[in-house]
Image (cartoon, rainbow, N blue to C red; front, side):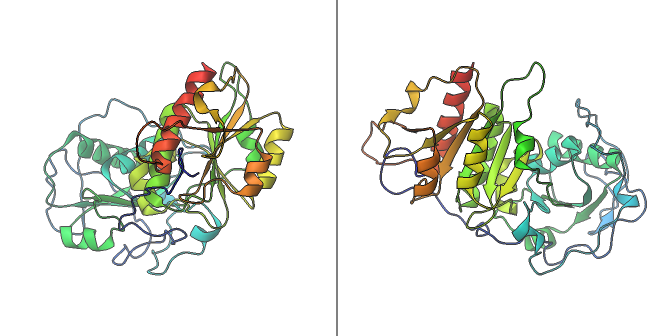
Length: 341
């Protein structure tokens, strides 16, 4: 999406990985699968103290229970993955990615969601005590995930973001779901609220957008197969764990996906700076809705724009002509959520 008002998008690119970058393991990633039943470190961060060593112990309770993993409760020790490669994995190009998760909140939600296997967690050996670290240690122990204390230099060398906060995890890729699964309704729940990314390539913007979308009640996300960023380590960091809770589908092309959504009765809204109707004037009721956000700069593509049921824009009152897609998307998601209430 081009942000709401006109002009260029201020995507604010950092040093995070570029779009399409593989999410395979980093240099120095663990060799071999998880062995045995590893438990977590003590809550105060005291263990054996040797970098790279497995840490044993327990931690203070988190107050939240991990849900059972769909399809059973198989543990990592029983299903070890092979060693991480130094080269980008092909699966990251054809699937969602998400194999490397960085940041304390992101790793904590990875373990809490219990949606996919976690191979191993690295934690810097110089971290000050913090409740979120206690949560990670306890959850890792419950899931029997290997947790290693490593030197700060080794962890930062393996990280693919500027600020991993001393914690990173290696996990199985995020599972993608068929598009029609995002349209399933459940008794007592609101109609589907789907977010479509029309070629968003900035990892920080996509991660921030996913975080806002999850908080606004988005029930599913659609990403195009090509010319768009998927779930890189920078996205997982910016998303702060939201990727573990939102089902995502990958489609060959958004125009065909929109056609399918409309055929199923979904009202498709495009956020476009060239639209005449303000976002605030939407009348949604209780219908299923899909919100389309375009790429930084180009905005919603022509074919996608032509297939939307309605186009809206965010009125701009200041001197700047645009918002970045992460900010504009957050406004749009919460306005749609408000209209659906």
